[in-house]
Each structure stands twice: as C-alpha cells, then as structure tokens.
Image (cartoon, rainbow, N blue to C red; front, top):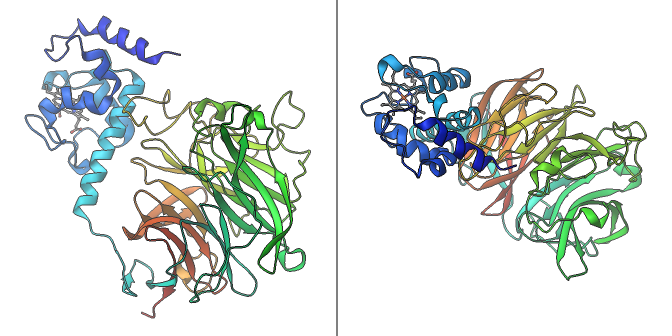
Length: 482
Ligand code: HEC
C-alpha cells in the first residue's frame, strides 16, 4: 500500500484545475503533512495560528457560521464557499486528508481553549472546589518509587505497587518504601515496557493469588532481545514471590523488537475469567489480524486455560484467547460496578484516544478507522466510521494520552458514584466522566499539571487513589466537608 504515491499523483492531476498560485512542484509532498499544508495554503487567509486574517479565524467554534461539529467542518472544507472566496478543497484533498485537517483544527482550538482556562493544580494539601465535591490531595507515598504503574489493595490495607523498571512492592501508607518483593518475573524494561499491571484475584482472601502483567523478554538466535506482554500469577510470602507461574505467554514467534504499545491491564469478571489487554506493539495492521495476539483484548481462565466459548476458538489459525480486536494500545480496562460491563481506554495516535465498551468478538477498528492522524500529520485511517467496526463511547482529539480508568464505587464522594475516572499522561489530568448508559454526558478535569497521571483506583476507605509519574508518588483524594 503506497498512499504517499497515490495521493501525490492525485494532487498533480487535479492541481491544474485550480488557478491557485500556491501549488508548485513541491506541493504533493506538502499535501501529505496536513498541518504543513495548512501553513502553506490555508494560513494565507485564516492566519498562521488560525487566528484569522483576510478570512475569519478558526479558533473559536462559537463564531463559526457554517456549523462546528466534525461533519459540518469537513463539509466546509470539502465543498467550500466559492462565491465567498473559500475554495472547495475536495479538488485537492482526499477525504482522509480533509478529516486530518479537521483534527488539526481541533488541536489548535483545544490548545487555544486550554490557554484561556485555569485548572486546579493542587499542591500541599490545598483544597480543590470541584463541581460536586470539595477534596484535598494527600500524599500516601511521596518517595522511594520509580514510575509507579499500577496498585492493588491487600485486605489489611497495605498496597501492592508495581514500578515499571521491574519491581513489585508492598507499601504501607505513610511509611517508607521497603525492599521489593523478591523473585518476581524478570522483565524487558525498555521504553513503555517493564513490570506493568498488578491485580488481586477476587478470591484472594482464601487463595492468595496475585496477578502481574509484564513485557516478557526473549533472546532470539541473533542475540536480539524481543518482548511481548505476558501474564503471571503467584503468591507473596515473607516478601517473596512464591508458587509463581506464567499463565499467558504467546509463542516466541509473535515477540517484537519495538519498545512501544504493550497495553496492559487486567480485569476479572468474578466468574472465573480474566481479561487482559495487549497493545499492537507498533505494528498497527496486526490489530486486525486475529491470528496474532497483539492489538487485542484477551480472555482466559484465572489459571490460564482458554475458555471454549471464546469467540474465535475453533476458527482456523485464530489466536484462541482473543475476546475482541482492532485495539491500538489499551492501557485502561475496568468493569462497571453495577452492570458488570467491560470498559476500555486506548491511546490513539495524534488525536483519537478512545473509551470503548468491550464486547465479545467485535472489531474496534484500529487502524482502519480512527479519529486521529499520524504523528507526521498524514492520514492514518480511511476515515472515522465503517460498517461492522465499533464506534468508541467517546474520544479525545487532540489526544490526552488516556491511561487507566475506573468507575468510582466508594461512599466518601456520594455524587461521584459510578462516574468514570480517567487518567491522562501527556495532558497530566484526572478527569471525571458522567456516563449515562453508553454515553458520556459530562466531563470535568479534577486536576491538571502535577505529573503524568498513570493509574486510578478505588481505595478500601472510599477514597480515590492515584499514581503520578514525575514526580513519582501516590496520592489520595480525600473529601473535605462543605
Ligand atoms: C483565499 C482565502 C482562503 C483560503 C486559502 C482558505 N479559506 Fe477557508 N474560508 C475563507 C473565507 C473567506 C471563508 C468564509 C466563507 C463564508 O463564510 O461564506 C472561509 C471559511 C472557512 C471555513 C468555515 C468557517 C465557518 O465560519 O463556518 C472553514 C472550516 C475553512 N474556511 C477552512 C479552510 C481550510 C482548512 C483551508 C485550507 C485547506 C482554507 N479554509 C483555505 C477563505 C479562505
């Protein structure tokens, strides 16, 4: 597939139709990088930063004359307003490129909007007055952790915390961090990989099983260390990992050299099944290929066996643990506390971070459809929708770098009950989403810019616990009486 050549040729063929001076021999290359194309072409009228020049600015959606939703915006660009000096850009831009232009305008609008707003940036027990509840951020573990990635509560109130470089620790709030648990699986700690998720079996009180996901190293014949997401379980006795076993490990032929897109989260359904997510490891087309494990949500039994009612069991060559496919890099996975539904969050490319309602056997579209563009400003998907491919519950364009998600199930913040809490790495946000069925009806940024927000969990005390990276710490949202 050589989109580059195709679009370039199309542009040359069509450009003679236009009396525009902008199109030179270099134009086909520029057309690939849509933000650059904006700068070369659209900026002449709409301003370099979309602030407006001889034509109206594009930063303030409320001032648009012809509609501000994605469909109207694409229509304005596609068909133009020729009698008013706005060209019909369908002569020059493909549908996919028009979509990327919409994404680019959204990026700029959002940057502008954020520039006008101030968000809570709580420090040192400062009180935050959010919409429904006042809260305070309290340090639980302020020192001694390196890139805390996930946490889980033991029945005695202590926490298990994973650190991406490969350590699992048992941590007590307010006490110094001690030695890591000895004997956990060795990991390929490179890039986005390492020791990732930790979760307790729902029957932990009687069986003691602790589950981990990690990037599993494999050294091939040429000495190259490849990696893929694997799942282990074990028990912790005297700060040692005991009875350890790998319950999911794909054949080494599927291991990849890249350092990106491992996933990975765990979710139990309380009926003996364990779901886990695996990113596509940077090979996007693999997400559509059900003979491969990457770019999928998987379902296994809690001991690693494959349920025979998985959707692709018995399908020739299919990877039998696959529950659904077409997922890019899912770093959020959680169950709704009331409905039991499985919800997922996945990183999009430049734009197109998604929240999905995960169901058996469905295709979530990556990389065929996406609300984002490639990092280099080129189209990456054919469009945003296609029959047979699932739409997200919601998406963020520009991306926030969505990570862990969890529904609040505690009682300390009654008006937050069953709201979806969403973490963001790049935008450094904790968001609260009000969800009605499978629709997001409202979003609130609870705090911003105090570090990359990696993980969010319900504490046994009804407080919300958050793992921050940079500075690395664990904080708790505590209610403050009104
Ligand atoms: C030659 C000047 C010119 C260029 C170049 C130009 N536009 Fe426009 N554009 C206009 C004018 C003038 C309008 C207002 C038309 C109207 O409201 O009837 C407009 C309107 C629009 C609108 C609709 C705004 C609204 O109020 O609803 C969008 C979106 C837009 N342009 C995007 C673009 C993009 C993207 C490009 C580059 C691919 C571009 N324009 C290039 C002159 C230009």
